Image (tube, rainbow, N blue to C red; front, side, top):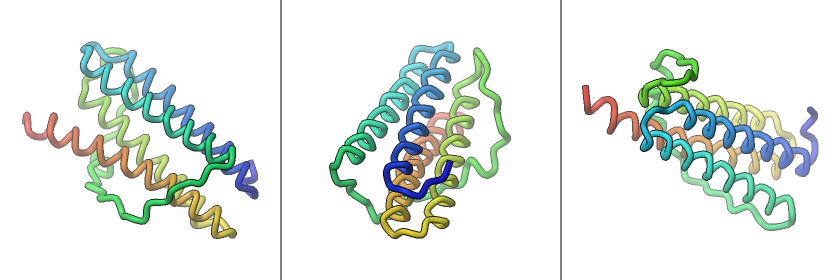
Length: 150
């Protein structure tokens, strides 16, 4: 897919957000405990909200860009990959989610770097920031719920 117009970029990003919503819905279905299901269903809902925000931008609304850098605890860099399976632990699910958000951040960052138009670069950077924010939330949850228990 050639991302040479803002409309194509938005379509691409909308697809990624939809895929993320499905990912978190599927992850929720693999959880045995209701509170774990609820956490991931909440993230699925948030991804749907991002999709709606992008659709609004596509419809002519302005995208508000945040310039603040998001803290990266780099936990995902040091954790072993986990394949989503039925009955996985909350720890495994958090690792899977951190890795997914890290990959999405990298994708949007790479696209921003490759973008020739400033408007596209800013759009990709804004999307990367959203993914970094998600990853940080998972890292904080991992720190509070997993690392403090051990």
